[in-house]
Length: 258
Image (cartoon, rainbow, N blue to C red; front, side, top):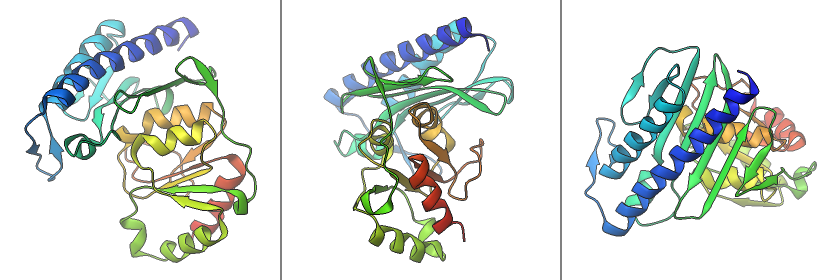
């Protein structure tokens, strides 16, 4: 994609995230009924209306791109240009009145993630990045920390149910013992902290690509490394994350790749 088209796409993604934020803030104040999907995860009218608002803007700005959304599935074909959209990532937090939810919008070109916007309207942070353009938070460029020793590393653990069932659980325990401190910020929050130097490593074993595609672009453009737990590149089937500063990611990968 040429630089002008990429800039146009990024502007559209930011506009779409802002439009979704308006929907989300409305229902945050008003309250919503909660339904359960077939997989027993919650969904609300805020999720659906936010995705509708996003799709309208993205389709107008880049009509040649497919859109794969959390609530309405795939519109178009896989491959080529494809938007990845989670209009309200963290619905469980939303319905329990905690601010750890966000709108996630990413763009793929072939197998490559080339831009991402992560907007947390109630928490109060918006980050964005595009390939080669750096990572930004509310207009200021951000960078991962320079942490290189595990003894100085701050580690955040997210969804790790699958990880607890195999030998990596013991390896994670040893890594935690050797780190400086352990936290569990979860959702968008620990990736934002990683990208702006507040954390050094994020570990998750149970995610969906729509949850983390935009965040991967942001962390990478901030100078971090973002892979699956075994070091593999992200795909549409990704279910795990190992993200960190370059040195800490390399050490964690060696420990966890059993």
